[in-house]
Image (cartoon, rainbow, N blue to C red; front, side):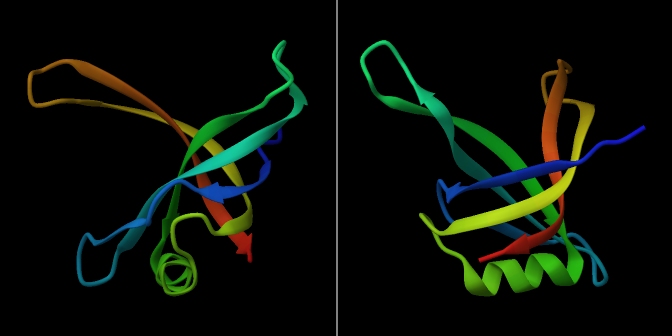
Length: 102
């Protein structure tokens, strides 16, 4: 089986960069990826894809990108769930980034 995702898009805002522990670092961001067709009004729409990157790669990414940066990413699609503060089950689908290019 194969789970590979490749995207090229722009960051919608600065990455959310956090140290989870002394050894774990995570950066989360949303990538706006243009669709390859236009809508009925002739406008090109975009999909907004949540992404996450870990550890040294996250640190490197945070040093080189800002809101609006155009980047290419490769990784895998992942789903997870958690319980929010009100006890409601929440579901998340995101791309876990393995590599990126500026």
